[in-house]
Image (cartoon, rainbow, N blue to C red; front, side, top):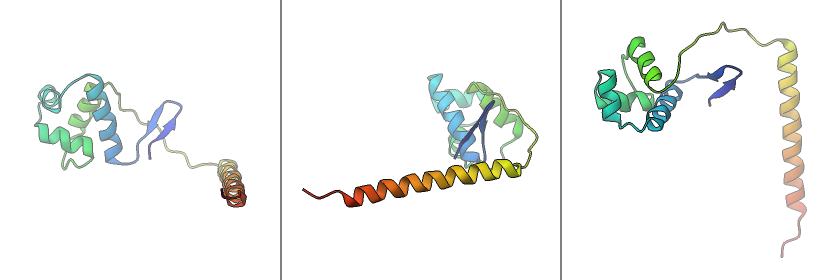
Length: 113
């Protein structure tokens, strides 16, 4: 799942990068073939990249594809969450579970017509 951050999106899997590239290519109204020609790669490479299945793709090509799709690759230092962050997340999850359980219980109590 792509997790939004204050500066963009946190991408955890290759197919997430591919989804961004595909979306940008479509926004630019380019076919995979036209996009590939601009990058200097084959249409199959673009297809593989968009599906997260590209093998041995250079960082240079991936960065060029992101740029052509209207994105910029950036990096930030990874910081582990604080105890307060973890506890707040757990409390939010617990609240959501309680809400869902209450909704399910209310649905179970409705008389059938």
